[in-house]
Image (cartoon, one colour):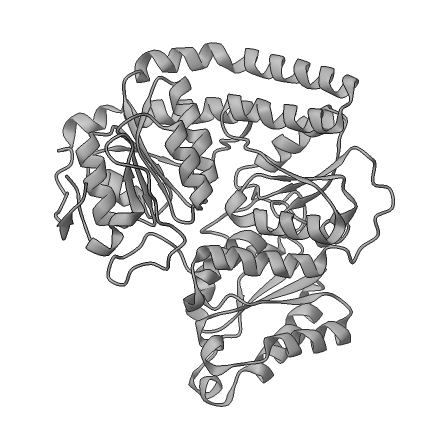
Length: 455
């Protein structure tokens, strides 16, 4: 049995062996070396795919190392978001304040790049020295005539999820400031897809084939002017619930715009995401077009999926992702490939997310919140998994243990959304699980111990 810190036992649940109870939403335990990212990271994840805005990190230059290269959201036009800017605070500003440097940096950047807006990210040190970032942004906005928005994302003040909220609150200041003319009754905003490998373009095309106008994509391949008029859309679609549910709820409260939670991963959830929208608009012709689209797309990929299923049936997988909603689709997608999910967890899952995972998963599945490398390695070994699905921080764990790995996070370059994305996913899973390299590597050789038995 895996050993964990005593204080973390409530954040781990084994289906079938104990009554359901799951703690979540807690700050990470000191000393447990969480896989979870900070508040600043959460805000950057959400906002920086907006490609025609300046993204200025107000803090030490090291925080600006989180660049486009780490999370390469694609743009169909401007690429200002690929540049990384920092006020590069030094000892003198830490003592006397950094507002003057922030003002000068903003003016210089706006004059040079002529952006449509600017986002200013507060880092940990700003929370300590107390710069009035909002006042500086307001002054520059008035002088330059573009939105200059503070993002209150001091890294130490919460979890990655608090960074999502800070980003959503900055976006709310932008939405509603543009004209809503020309927006059709059958119109949507796509929230929470970050276009890492062109997924937003694929999803947008599906909806346009159904006869729906996409007003704004927030934030993958995002544009400031589109986001400013997003309040005119008839419906919001939330793909990444962890990051965008807060914005969707605020838009419903402020503008009355309803929202649906959807997933674009796996053929089952992708099809349902399209049908959900067709049912919402209650248009017979739209539903017919949707049925034809889904039928044609599945017919194109399903025979190849069956071939991969022959090789993968009976294999076990572990999933550890940022938001839990993505894990639902992954569990279903693995089932289509004949695989069982033995371990599943997330950095920012809610109580509702974990209850849904409990209902979805098989008996014996380990469900874990805000885990750390030592725990994860222990669970992989205990369950004897053949595949680990996660992000950049999980990759070394898998490879050191001699286990196949699939990047389903922000560093990947292959589209995994949509019907074609399911085929890409199957191809990648098959390639890593069935690689002959694992015959040459001692499996699970690096697993260590812990502190106290759980379960």
